[in-house]
Length: 263
Length: 344
Ligand SMILES: Nc1ncnc2c1ncn2[C@@H]1O[C@H](COP(=O)(O)OP(=O)(O)OP(=O)(O)O)[C@@H](O)[C@H]1O
Ligand SMILES: Nc1ncnc2c1ncn2[C@@H]1O[C@H](COP(=O)(O)OP(=O)(O)OP(=O)(O)O)[C@@H](O)[C@H]1O
Ligand code: SF4
Ligand SMILES: [Mg+2]
Ligand SMILES: [Mg+2]
Image (cartoon, rainbow over all chains, first blue to last red; front, side, top):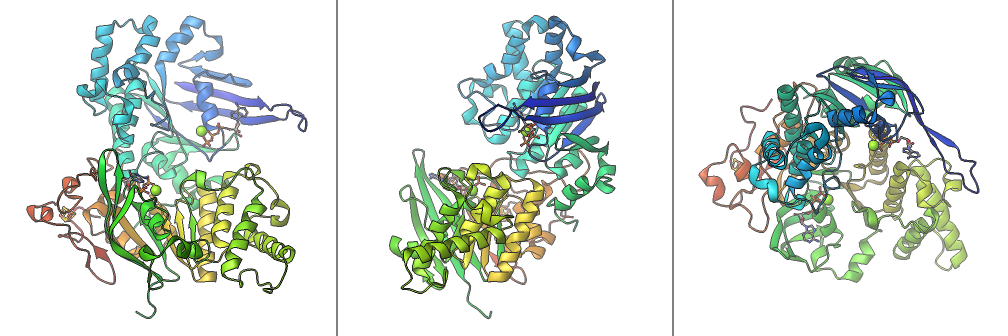
């Protein structure tokens, strides 16, 4: 469904009095394929290039080299109209449920905003949009009466549910989940992980799940790629990678993982 | 027991006033820490971990804080009745702190070395052993000794080339290195008790495990007692000798780490543990914990966990359950402690 072929991304460093504008190589030669309906994990430490990768997939940034194909189409070659349609099919859920919702918008406006942005593609009138917002809230375990409240009236877990409802508003086929639970307490994280799993079962969604939390990745992902300094160092079935890590960096990550010992 | 505890918190009650009303945020906290013990304090956001740590350093601003009762005995002396001058003598020197709030941490405008030297000089004023220079030594000699100590301490916390890097500014260090500097800063006065509030939460797992190993070394070498505040039970399993589980301002379960994690006996501890995806849990079968933490302005009557507890009964709402020893210092504040049928 999503294919990356030898994707690289460099950032030109700023030229200053002292540096000659060194380029930062954020991603190097990334190749991977995400299958329809699976959860594909991307694991890496801070600065490894995870967020850069999501920006490339969302086409908020262009790769320096390589191709990204979504449902067989090379993103770089799509017409503006086709790109708009594609944008409605890939949505993102951000890490920080406190920062990612506009505090001045009601839940109704937050959830219907993507439908408004993509109204040309979706063609929903206002009544339908509101009805759909209510449906989405029910789907993520909130209620219709929450529509007219503001983000500050919700807990972290509830805000992340609102973020998920917003991401589902355009009826996407794929969700990019960039550390969706790392700002949450474990009990709330469990609720959100269960919700994501249930939604995937119901809606047949494909997930790209980005995280540095190995226990969460093991739990939620079918397959995964480990990235270190912009390069994929290991990829495979999640369970295999955890049982028999092939790469030294992966082994180091697993050894450092503060897991509860199996008691 | 052989030695009296270094720190003994007894039935501590604290309220905080905000415009919504007065919240009873610590409701009878009991915790004692001996030398060489590393106590993990765990619990979900807002349960009172930081306020417990800040109370020991007497750094909770009052108002809005009001201590309603209890004692904080440090070496037998009640810190709640000590004045600010007395507390200043203990802070940094006998009680070290690593704060959760990043704004109280490093000053971006000063070199790392200068910040460490200031702390060392202040500690030396109270305990001349710290620098080990003669009382009549001049300012220059004292400064030089403080700088040497700063370099040694940075090296101890694992900063390579400490002598060269000591003149760097905070922004020239990575997050992990800055965290080590903060640990160095808390340790340079050689405290007997270290309170570390989420010292590794923002760090990558590889850096985190280095820092936890470092702390363990420090405990061994200096016979410190440590309170390690975290919300990560994995960190506790790895780094602590003891653990206290907090819920809504109460320590609901505590004791040696192996006993508590192997035989979680309070329903909240069990719920917390079953929320963590461990290797045995199949997808979609994570248990979690329904509901939300209570409002502490109007806390639930009796056991504060009752509204979310599957085992709650009428008796649970009569009054707050007292902590009982269920064996070897393993305490649980529950009317029906013990492994429930569903605990693995
Ligand atoms: N706009 C930019 N200009 C220059 N360098 C950048 C830019 N965006 C990212 N980088 C660099 O690219 C690398 C990868 O960054 P990225 O944000 O993708 O990491 P990440 O894996 O998401 O990290 P984290 O876990 O901390 O969010 C880093 O070295 C970063 O400094
Ligand atoms: N300055 C303050 N004024 C009013 N209430 C406060 C203040 N500081 C903390 N509280 C309240 O006291 C309770 C305990 O807060 P505390 O900071 O100790 O939680 P915590 O366990 O450290 O949480 P976290 O894991 O988020 O750091 C919370 O309900 C909080 O809202
Ligand atoms: S005292 Fe009662 S309500 Fe509280 S945890 Fe125990 S069983 Fe549950
Ligand atoms: Mg990122
Ligand atoms: Mg805190």
